[in-house]
Every structure is written in structure tokens, then in C-alpha cells.
Length: 269
Image 1: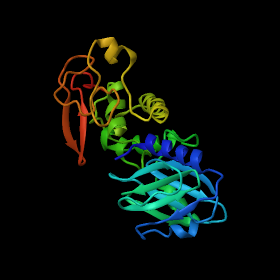
Image 2: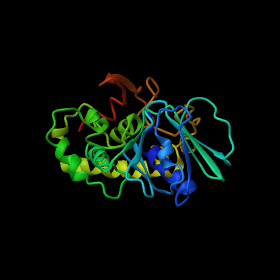
Image 3: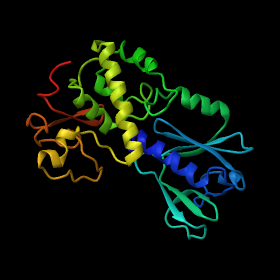
């Protein structure tokens, strides 16, 4: 599932291509009332965690998109393109076409529904209005492990499996540490590292978490080859040597997701 940096990057792409322009809007699948947006100016696109909201002039509702596991937005130059595959929503101008395929959600939400959606999403490290104290209030009272809490979208918005594993490694934290056993200094370090890593992801379009001394060139190793891209410490590196201590990286199922960690580097909190 795309992590939060992907949605923020997508919001920026939509604004760059369609912001301030009157758009064509259709739903080739017929499963979305896209015609209500036809001929309106796209005025805003922003991400809240893993959710995208798109606003239009003179339309009270906003489009809510959740990509889920399989959703993608594809961009094509020009407006005259045949519909290929299952396109849920097509946006177009004379210069560009955007096709949304396979989302978990693509729907119109009225203002009250938008407020309800954003209220249930935890603070997003990529948003300037995010309040880390709100997340800390949940974390500091919880018996749940920090590894599970970081993936709970009502605690933090936009953090997924890669960022979860990597920030815990970078800070040397045992993933199974209960939230209430963390001190505030440690929580602030988690938040600050997520802010830095996720903003870097928005800029580059990929997740890179290794420090300069552990990059391939510095270590004389081959670059990582994985369909997720990016240089990481533990994510999807089960059985491979830790880049810091050489101990084999471990994996376990935790709350129906794969957790990766180094048992030596992350053996204390």
C-alpha cells in the first residue's frame, strides 16, 4: 500500500497539472458521480495521511480517494486518449489527462463527511498543521507495542510498513516496546525522524533511510534491488546481514503485517 509520501506527491502533481484550470471529469466505469465536477475549476488537492482530497470551485463536495493496495493515478499528455482498462475517474484538460484505476475509495464527500474523515486520521508528519502531542497522548497511555502504534492510522497518518520498520531501526528501538514505556524524548526523536524521512520521500519519490556511511558506495556493496526501490536498513531484508552489525535481519507477522528488525541493534529501549 502506498505510504503517505506518495499521496502528498500525488496531491502536488494534481495541483501542478490541473490547479486553477477548468477540467473535464468522467467515470468510464460509471461507479462515481464524476459528471458533477465537469466544467469546474480544480482549486485544491491535499493529502491527509493515506487519503487524498480534491476540491473544485462552486462544488461543496470534495473527491475523496484512497488508493488502497492497487490504486494508481496515471498521467498522459493531451486530452484525446482511449479508455484503457478499468478507469474509475478521468480528469482532463487540453494539455493533460489523469486516469485513476483500482482505488479502494473514490467518492464525493460533503463538508461534514470531510471533517469526520480528517478527524479520525492521526497527525501526519508531512503536514504543517500536524500536532505530535496528539499522537503522544495516545502512545504514552498504550500497552500496545510501538510497532503496532506507528501503523495505526488513527495514531499517525501516512506511516506505513517501510517507514515503521526503518525509523525503529534508526533509533535502535525494540519494536515490541509498549508505547507507555517510551519517554517523551524518544517519542520526539521518532516524530522528527519521520518528518525528515517522509519529506525526503516526497522530494525523491522513493523511500531512502540509510545514512551516508551505509550507502552502497560507502560500503562497497551492490545497490538494493527491490520493486519498492530505495536504500533501507531492514525492510524486506529478512536473513540478510544488518548493514550496521552484520546480524541477520529478522521478520515476524505482527497485526497481519510483516515486521522487520535487527535483534542486536534493536535490543533495548
